Amino acid sequence: VMAQQQEKRVPDGFKVLTEGKASILQRGNDVFYNEAQVTNRDLSTAVLRHFLPILEKEKKEGVLKKSRNKGAPGQLQQQPPKAAEEGAPPDAAAAFNPAAGARLLEGLAASGLRSIRYALEIPGVSRIDANDLDRAVVESMKRNIEFNGPEVVAKVQPQCSDARMIMMQSPLVYDAIDLDPYGTPSQLLDSAVQAVGEGGLLLITATDMANLCGNQGVACWANYGSYPIHRPYCHEMALRILLACLETHANRYKRHIVPLLSLSVDFYIRVFVRVFTSPNAVKDSPTKLSHLWQSSGCDSWWLQPVGEKKVNGNSVKYTPAHRPVVPERCPETGSGFLMGGPIWSEPIHDMAFVEGLLQDLERDKDRYAQYAKLKGLLTMVAEELPDSPLYYDLHDVCKTVKCQPPKSEVFRSALLNAGYRVSCSHANPLAIKTNAPSSVFWDIIRCWIQEHHPVNLKDKDPQSYLVKLLSKEPQVKANFARNAAAMPKSKVEGGPRYVQNPAHWGPKSKHGRPPVQPGAAVQQQQQKAKARREKGGKDKEGSNEQQEVGEDGQEPDVAEAGAESAEGAKVKKQRVE
Image 1 (cartoon, rainbow, N blue to C red):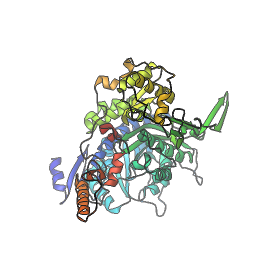
Image 2: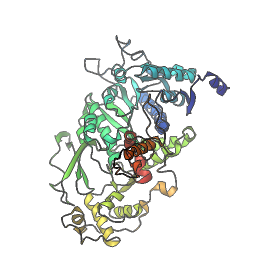
Image 3: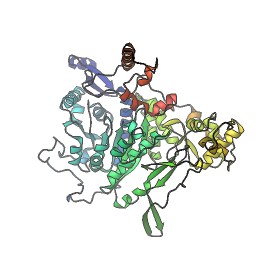
Image 4: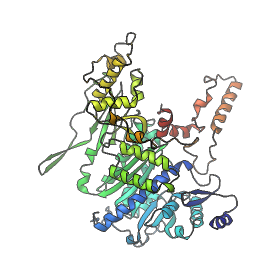
């Protein structure tokens, strides 16, 4: 009956798209919709279903500290004003009873699909402010809200305003704020850390991976206040840059962040962080951020905290960091260094939260279309070393020394046998996360080459980085005997790990633009090349026109972001070139 009623209500020219319990009306590309982001929406729904009961329990038990601010100029207020000020967006400061349930904000709601899913699938939510700046989009959102029935109409409040204005006029109001922009979220972060309530959750997406991964370092600096270094660990570095940016914004208001989950997925990153108010905790922030020293001649890197904390009994002293953590030249190759950051160098996940989320996901697996992918991501996160930032890419390391790479289990065994810890990373299936210093890492590589795959150095320049790396005698004798702990538990059990996506799964055109059709960009480039040849131009690429576009047929600017995706590394061992 419901299907028949919906069929009658579908306007001419529209089609119905269903995801989870929500259905929306879609016509062409009038309103932005990307089916690839179903992973994002499934994940966010699962996180909120797990998080909101925790928050509610903390509120009831009085765990969360109440704000002491009294509304003085420049200070945050615990409750929004009773009435909106002149010029304020509709409902931005409407009266709300926190006891009625959780209040959420989706700052860039587009079709409203995410907010509708939250209203239908997350218990304990009483109000969701779904905002978009485009009036035509908001009209479409209203149509979708009504299309989903009275329960959604009662909970989801559509708004047409600047998301920053809504958040600035609603300090400490929202239990969770979801920001999923088309590009960088940097302009939204300052107001977001003010609008989220005590202990509340920020759900932030960034899709400007070309910037965050180091292809456009200056743009990353302008947006996030951090300089990226383009190396194999770039996807985890991107997460840490965003977390560092959130932390510095929160610090301005005597607040700080606690990451619950930070993921590099496909062509974007997604972080879930709690925000708390504590002037004392803010003093620790410089110790949580680090500059990154990257060797120019090899894959070695070092982290140097921005600040130091010294505790002597009841005395606590904060100081700037003392001296560089690296010598003047790279100890392995004699090369110089690149200096990046600052980045977040504390854990990027709360492992207890991740374990609870995995249990909820398993219990509710029929709810999520992307269950297998979410299970794989969270399983790999649960196996990561929480206190070992960044990682090495085993194949890239072996490419540096021109040797055949060992199997991952063999190399991990050598690290374990040497007394160090090691794990994989959700961001790259070839990643080696370890607490071993770079000198030990390279000693194991040298032992592997000496024992299994000798490299001929006779015709090599004695001053080359390769010769300098391999001419050193190992100080640590590697033991490559198989260690049972080297095999990840998830691999032994045979569950999902790095789940591949369907074809043509990636970024989409911004709303209002013609959709990108698979293969269309390839045909366009081939036609351009043919026209150049006909005009007598010399086509240096010959029949390789497809190199000018993404492998999935996207236009170059779209493919560039897609090339930064973690999934690209997972499927074809790609990294940004």
